[in-house]
Length: 158
Length: 273
Image (cartoon, rainbow over all chains, first blue to last red; front, side, top):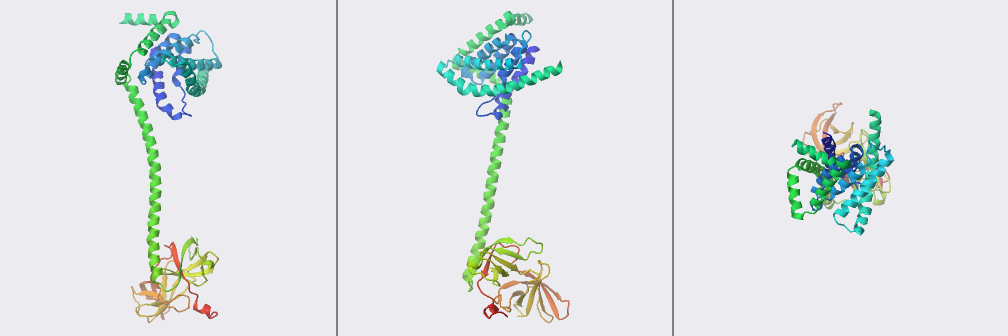
């Protein structure tokens, strides 16, 4: 049940990511909802759930770009595992730490992905500068909002 | 199955997710190292089975987006074409009118100046309009204003580049006219700025359908300019008079261009009446 509870919003976000989000494109940059959600899952449910969720969602993303099949899955798996170490059940994280975690996850995911598709170090740096930076900034803005709303919601429930 | 599932969960949970990490990394590397043909097969199988609902949803949303864009583009194009069409219709009408005016000008002995109406008296009893030619174009006061269809009025005030024209339906205007068949002279008048009538002597044998032209009396309008046709006749308030309701051949309210006949009033040359 918990797996479905994690997976279904992820699939909805994946659909939103490739459809509706293209409408709020700013200078070719769109926020990456899936990495935000992966960080959220990792922090809330821990490494195991984040790894499995990251892998499944990554495979779904890869299927639509089949020449690099497995690359996003691998990147998400590793990111999910690393962020999951900081599961909130054991460590209390403030909103700034979560945003920093999101930034780290975003960069790490892009670096692992680029390495998995065998880009050379020069190209990886260029990709990080031209693609990851604008997407990352937009994702951090949306991520900040998400974590802020999530915190307010949690406080209300408490 | 239950045993297999429990074993898998136990393995995944090993070492705080290390088992899951190991398994998922291994699977990822397995897929990464397949050749392109195998990856394509996986793609085709996945999109036609487990990912079909997601693919259909994406395609549906994308179609809506495409339709919305196409609709916006077509609306813009439609508006542009409509404006273009309206402009062309106007130009075509103007072309026809000007061709008619050109022929009229060729047929006349008078010197004519073509003027465009640039403003109208906005009042309810609209009786004047302004044209874009004035003293700089040899226009003077009391010059007849006509179209190929007939008389419109006369100039009453002239500026350097504009002139004010008083139209036939102005209640303050009276024009001496002639019934073409019986040659009876009458006076063209209007009381409400819309209907025109001619006051004839009571013995006049005018009837519906007779045509009215200018008589040339008064010295402003040359003789024989078409004014209108009689729609109906009735006895006047005084027994000695007969009223004939007139349909003007040129409705002064449906005009865009007019001719001014360059001809000074006869009494003007003689130093006034």
